Image (cartoon, rainbow, N blue to C red; front, side, top):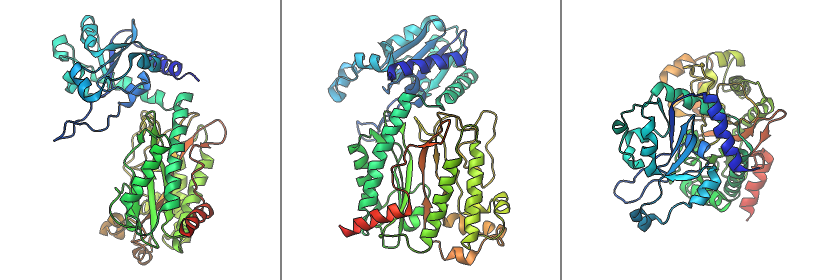
Length: 461
């Protein structure tokens, strides 16, 4: 596998799909975002379109394309003043090796654009190139008397999104390394979480292990919720201490070379799942395993989601939470009272990766479908998450309008007794292949017996 060759192949494939016979395309990496009151910046993350096509992640840089001349890479090398504060910056030879292009100083971009002022111009990547051209050491498009073509820009950006769905070997290598780093962190949490430990403290240990295992950064803000906080879908870790009898939900992933992993595990704070927790966990796990088994080329992701909804509805009927037939409950979105989000999403250079909805499809506004982030037929090379869950979310379950609408479908007395339970989510990263799906995160413990063995071992220390 030659990563540089694969990056060059991405550019060639995208250029063919664009089919341009004239025009200029600029793909901007983005500018660092300053932290107010300091002389520092937030952690820089290059725009995914730039990183995908350039193979590097330098700030304030631009990848340019002209159908006659091909691709050019313009990089913002440090000024003499910059070097005092941030060092000498990237090695041009290393950038050339990673991108397959000879990097040119960003100061040359304006001269490169000058003879192309009469051509259609598409702006891709980070749109701060148009809003803050000075950050790219560019005087501004008004001086060149050109205006970006918004329709052309949107069309070309969508083509990149479609091309990014199937991952090449270099991308999959990065995602496997991200999954391995995520495993290290989640395993540490499973083996060390104890009553009295704060959610925030558990987050720190988890993320430190990501970095020790090779992560460049976290793929997104880590979610750590214990007890009722586990019902907050994007729970930011707090000072709340883990308590005996709680469940703790951790949704956290490592990032390597710009590629994300996305993993959720739910486990008991004590040595074992207690009572109803065990039944709910078994239902979520069964639902996830069935969805993974069904993930094949040509299968509609929306159908996977609806099948998971029916399984959850049927299980909640068996457990005395819902009343009625699973099909009817899903048709009226009663299941979404407990499973409001989608089954998952595409994964790659973004946690919710590009191209998740097939062009021409309109997202639904139904309660049970409006947060579905993937609506397309699966194909080999796609990486998706499979993440069913069951939650007792007060904001949903205490809503008078919903209680009235689902008066007969829900055992509300039973639900009210469970409002402090929190929630359960299980999430893995799945590579779609011609045969059975490959679970990239399969070696992170998920079975009840595995988890309870690790939790018992933690308490035996």
